[in-house]
Length: 186
Image 1 (tube, helix red, strand yellow):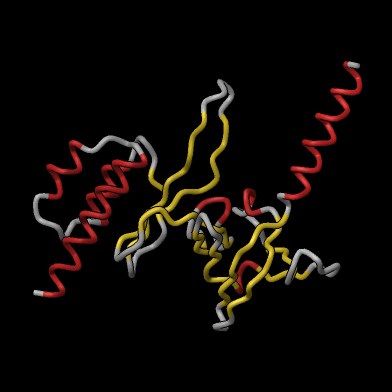
Image 2 (image 1 turned 90 degrees about the horizontal axis):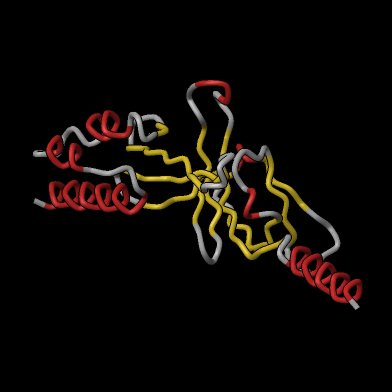
């Protein structure tokens, strides 16, 4: 009986996992094309050199597009922007960054990962028009927020109080973008 239940659970998990290999998405290319598709492995989208997809789940043929030819990937839950890294070991590599806050200054997240202690974490990045993509960590996020949002008055006091949490970073960047937009409309 235990073997039967275990076998059924194993079969259920493998069927569910197989069903989730492809998920609906739009790929927007650097050539201006929008590809409506079923994208393979959305959960593992970062650090790919190419994205595999099918036009529909019924299609037998799997197609691919090189990451350097992709601007955006839009899914029902998330939007990813494909950007190049300008430093370190991965310099020049295109990666998909999950967009958390859109605007003049953008906040991105890259894959969650699990540390040895089992706690979940994320890598955050910011990008301002005309500036490079910058990873921000718990150690240096205030430094980079002061640089990237330096044109906003009273920024230093706001940054000093800011905690390194996703919701706090999103709120700070949203307020900065609202301020920046208000400067353009005055």
